[in-house]
Length: 149
Image 1: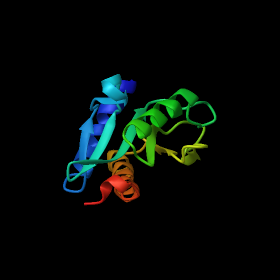
Image 2 (image 1 turned 30 degrees about the vertical axis):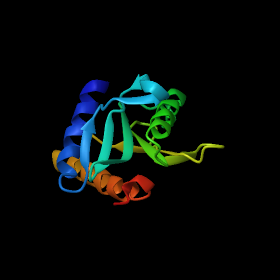
Image 3 (image 1 turned 90 degrees about the vertical axis):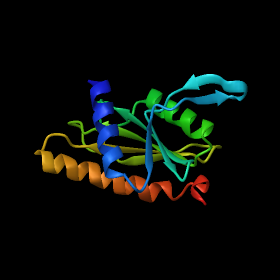
Image 4 (image 1 turned 180 degrees about the vertical axis):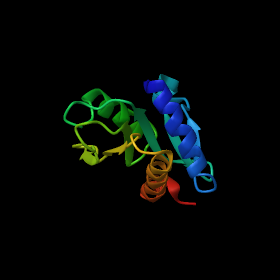
């Protein structure tokens, strides 16, 4: 189910962000110098050929609607390797509530955000959720120093 949710979110964001941001699916990113430690974030957002934001898509939250520690570590590695000030974990809305929050990493200053998409409504409601997420991503991508022309 995680892979299906990932593809759904990626395809819908690609459509919603057309003309504003380029959506790359699972681009190769290396954590270490010399192309060491290959990683593949689910979504890389680019503007004019430069990476401006990173996202990872997860189907499940913990029971209390919080991001899993391992997911946060993974997002921290992506933001660090891509030299971005922040990134986001995108979850499917869980019974525990919306996980919209942020964690600022001590001694690194990276901001790890979480967002959720509610898939329980009619198709137009789900599309509105995707559009709201796309608009939010455009705004958040402007905080990146890499987004300068």
